Image 1 (tube, rainbow, N blue to C red):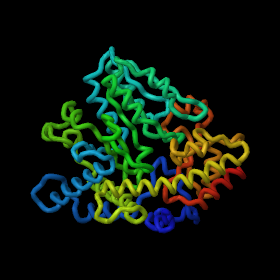
Image 2 (image 1 turned 90 degrees about the vertical axis):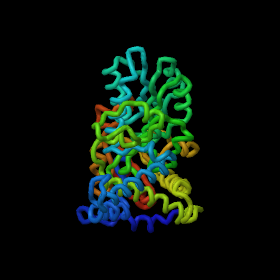
Image 3 (image 1 turned 180 degrees about the vertical axis):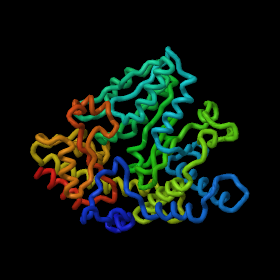
Image 4 (image 1 turned 45 degrees about the vertical axis):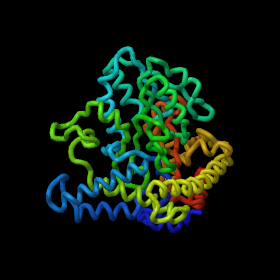
Amino acid sequence: MLDVLAVRQQFPALSECYNGKPATFFDNPGGTQVHESVIRAMTDYMTRRNANTHGVFATSRLSDEVIDHARQAAADLLGAAPEEIIFGNNMTSLTFALGRSLAAEFGPDDEIVVTRLDHDANVWPWVMMAEDTGAQVRWADVDMETCTLDMEHLQSLINERTRLVAVGYASNAVGTINDVKTIIGWAKAVGAYSYIDAVQYAPHGLIDVKALDCDFLACSAYKFFGPHVGLQYGKREHLERLRAYRVRPAGEELPGKWETGTKNHEGLAGAAAAIDYIAGLGVAYGSTAPTAPRRQKLAAAWQVIGEYEHLLMDRLITGLKAIPRVRIYGITSRMDWDKRMATVSIRKEGLTPEELALKLADQNIFVWNGNFYAVSISERLGVEQSGGLVRIGLVHYNTIEEIDRCLAVIDRA
């Protein structure tokens, strides 16, 4: 079992006080707190290694080593080859950039499938690409009771005209984990690209892009205890063939042709440290040896993290179900815990989401309210015009005691 108290001591923000009191961070789906090793790595880079790349002098060569280490760490995180990893500001900017390159292959006879469950970063880049190319957008609907994708409807939209299927690995609004492997298979069967937004899934489970056989997948390090850096995987064959919008000296070699300008070097140092922190949990609490490959350590770590997060999720959802006038959006059956993450959105009758979030904030319990950029599901659920939802997002540094304090505030509100 994860020693959560020992884990918490490694996150400096968790011991900080705000308004004279410690905070409970349940705002994790919007961005997790940062591990101490990440802070050290970024400080070390800016103190001892700061330079631009590919020079003949010491700090430039050290910068190259930092980037190479980060790319290998990211490849191990996703189960990819290093040259298939592209770094950028965030998932959103990486997706828009790829959309610009893909647009050359799309026309009025083509169709793009998006879903009403996704964050807008995996919707609007493709809608705008369709506007530019004349392609048609098809919207996959959601089961309103469980806030899960209507898989039958989604499958019916995929046909010989489909060129791209964009879907989230997990919902940032309601926690649903989608059956992306099946959806990728449907896209592949008709020769369409698959684009997976794994931003919300990445802090909670192991990703294997080769097993999924997706064409593209993106996530962000600031959602898994690191800095604001985006990671994108693309199949080598696509990255080599597609035209990247770049300056001439960047060249055609992967992955540099896709990384516009100077990268966030200190951010990459921090992203690598975040991945290594997670891998370290696989050694400390899993069944792997310190000498095991990083990928093996990561697999063990996610197993331990997942088991602990299921305990947290069970306590939260069970507690919320016992509070009068609270509605939980999404899967609530314990039998289906493997189909959702510990990201839970609610409303309480008689309070707007902002009012409930403020009552929690008054007790230093930090949660998000609104639509969380998942505009389509907020509209589909009929809550957009009345303030959206309150979102409580748990990760492995949260505790049962924090959940109980949160439940007490919601009950009294």
